[in-house]
Length: 409
Image (cartoon, rainbow, N blue to C red; front, side):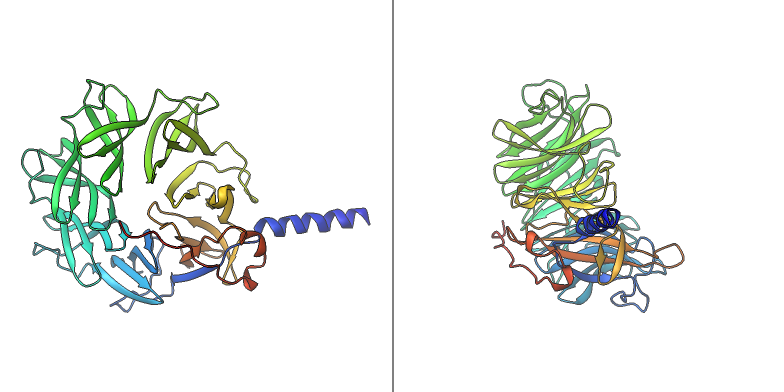
């Protein structure tokens, strides 16, 4: 009898670990027809670089024939933003490749190119326009852009990107604000209170009129910086430590949210953390040496992440997505969970996949293989406080009320 009770208790614990206090919505899957084509998204890399704002989900998509483009889904309806049949703005070339997307209230931005043209482009729902390409002069620099970094971040009518010039040897971070290009920082400049020059720019983000970025210098110094009104300030660098005394190295990936900035850094040997800096205070949020919530025994490292409205969403290398909404680290979705009656085998998150209210991600299901692809893009609304404890049976859960979205910046 005791053995039976123990077995039942173990089964109940396993069920509780995999129970999902979230309501998921499938946006598109490998059976969905590609807009403007007869093929489906039935290929291993069908879904990449998913970004979201409100009810609009944008992503890089590929058909089983290899045809690819940038697509948007809104309220069950898909449309092509750009694909291999699209002529690049200010060029006669057509797109042959695409780079990650970033969504905002004003539309979606993405990298792309083809033929002799490469740049960043923006779609506002009605027209495709150029943000920058290699025919444009470098602000406060020499000549025109040669190429660009892969990532872009857009908020409202402002976009930040990394541009490369002078035969691929010179680099900087630049902004386009309503059609006006400007330099944020480049390799002729030094960090505050230092004489060594910047040598590498790693990640960049916007917050209103400020630009946040991570960078290294030629001497190996590494830090997070803020540029506001043309003035640089240092937020976190590799001379600082966590409150427990562990030294921070390679701080990167700044995600500003008001007066708080979330970032990723290395501590010790082989460990990564996510932490916040607010004023002079640094606070540890996630350490990949921690025991993760749910059935996983290890994060196996921290992958891409986003931080909005005081909530963190991140993907880990255990193929699970987590959130700290409400101040408690929680499993969002991962292997063993069930969506629409299918067992999830992996869940992956992209860095622009959270708008502060809704997270978008892609999953693979049991049975997915190189012979049969079964994948989908899904969204989940992060629930109001207390909702998580009331929704252990996903099939019976109702969608929680959405939090008020902040005004577009």
